[in-house]
Image (cartoon, rainbow, N blue to C red; front, top):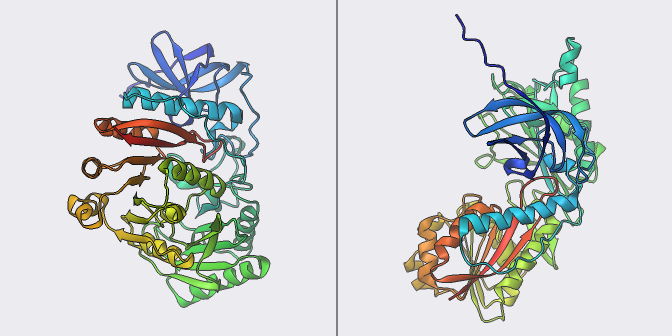
Length: 472
C-alpha cells in the first residue's frame, strides 16, 4: 500500500524579516528558518510549507495580511512565472541596500579579514532594458500558467519561444514582452514567432531532439548595431531553404539588423562554440564602444551584458590599480581583453591570460583595432599558464587585475600570485562568497584597502564587487 503523503502545515501571519540567497526572502518561526520567493522584508503573510528539513523549510506566500513599505509593484506580465527578475517586488533602493549588505556579510563572515569602510554601492542608472544580449529558446512544449491549467481545455498552439521554466528543462514560457533588453528584441522575437506559426515551422522538441527552430540570440550595442543569430536543426536541403525564407523575412522586416547570422546545430545541446556560424546578411560581428575604444563582439564573444555598468565597473578597477604609465600589469581571466585594453593606456605593458582560445583571438583583434601595441595575450588554463616560470620569463607584475568566474580562483593561481608579490591586486568578482574565501588565502601577504560593490543586474540578487589589496 502506498504510504500516505504527509500534509505540510500552513503558517499564519508570519513576518518576513530579511533577504536570503537566490533572490528569496527569509522568515523565522520558532527555530525553523523558512525561505520564501516573491516576498520582501516587512510583508506579513500566510505561508504554505512546500518542503521541510530539520532546521529549514521552503514555502510560498498564499495570503498577504500586510504589505511592506519596501514593496514595489512588479512591472512585467511574466513576473513570478518565468523565474527571472525575482526582486521586482522590492524597491530598487532597497535592492541595492541589500546587495551592499550581501557583500559585507560575505566578506566578514567568510573572509574574516581586516576590512576598511565599504564604499556605497554603485547602482545602475538603467533598471529596465539594460542588457545587451538575450537568448530565447523555441519549444513545442509551451508552459501553461496556473490560470490556463485551471481552464481545463486543449490549446491549439503549444509552440512557444521564450525562457526555460526553472525545474522543467523541456518546457518554455512564451514571452510576450521582456523588460531586460531594448524593445527591438521583443519585436524581432514576436515577429519570428508569428511568421513561424503562420507558416507551420516546427519548434524543437528537447526530449525527442526533433524540430527545426531551436534558439535565437539578440545582441544590441552602444553603437546602435544589432545582431540576430538563429539556431536551427537542419537535415535536408528543403529545410535549409525553409530556414532561409525565414531569414529573408527577418532581413526585410528589420533592416536595422547589421549582423544577421544562422548556425546549423544537429547536436543534443545548444552550445555553438564548436560550430560554424554563417552570415546571411551584414557583418559577422558588431562593435561596442567605451571611452573611444572599440571592441569587436562576435556571436561567440563574451562581453559584459550591462554595457553602461561595465564601463563603471572597469573605471573602478582602473582607479584601484593606481597606474602611472610605468607598471607591468597582469590581467587574469581576461576574456576578450576588455579590461586589459581599457587600462593599457595607463600602463607600460599588459599581459592577459584566458582559458578560451577564441576569446584570446578577440582580445588580440581588439588591441589591433584600437592601435594598442603594449598588450600580450595567452590562452590556456590559468593554473597551467600562470606559473613561476611564466613570471620569471615575463617579469614580476606591479599590478594584478583578476576577474575570475563564479567559482573564484584555483588555489594554484593564488599560490603563484603570492609568489609574484605584486604591489597591488585588483580583484573583480561576480560572487562575493568565493571572493571572500580567496581574500582569506591572500591575507598573509595582502591587506584589503578598498571595497566597491557594483550592481550590474537590477531586479536580481546578483552583485559584482571590486576589492583593492595592497602588499603588507
